[in-house]
Length: 311
Ligand code: XIL
Image (cartoon, rainbow, N blue to C red; front, top):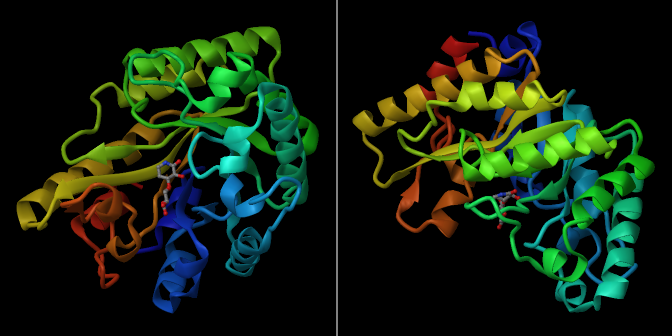
């Protein structure tokens, strides 16, 4: 079969994968990703702790290596992520509100400015809501209040006028209180002229856990006038994997791909790495894993076949 990146492109979508420096240095992984992924999301190296470990001291080494690799492999790059509560240095957490706002604006100007013309999209703000739809009580929210998200998007637009600006979150893949809250944010931004171009649905799913309302949910966001994308797909299971679980997982991957394909403004889907060798799941959810379309030896799993079939 043709690689996923070609099959998706023929449907007017992209298929992508996350990539880190260590994953780029894994030659088998690099070759597989070059073959299958037309888009790369930078897994860690554009986050705040990587790019501005101390105030005003910017390091772009890792992100630059990944973007250079993507150029060499004919891939486009999604930037990830400018404003998040996690993987942000302690000095940022410790700033008083008066300085935190300026630090956020300076960070966005420097990082999105550096990658201007090199990334086609940014996850500007990541994971700002709780499961019940209230704002996450992060240090951003506590010190800057509700307005920080709009300020971040305005700063990102100024720094890189050509990048598509996304709000990105997990557990918003289907209808529910959290996705309702993001919907309301996007609706109000559109009404007020706050620059937002897309919503990223992370898609960190449990086995058998594709929401039945996923297509409907993607469509309602698209109907607000933004692009939508599946940005970090993986489907985790309790280890060890077996053929029954892998079959359910394959159905899950196929269902997500079909939901995106059915929505004109769903621009593409990205998995959070391709091989189980490089998945973040086992380290964060003990006893869980086998979440990606290729196994730890880079052999295709039923989930890969399901993606091929869907595209
Ligand atoms: C993960 C990375 O994959 C890990 O290497 C890191 O230790 C933690 O972050 N949501 C996101 C991603 O938006 O940035 C996270 O990536 C996974 C969850």
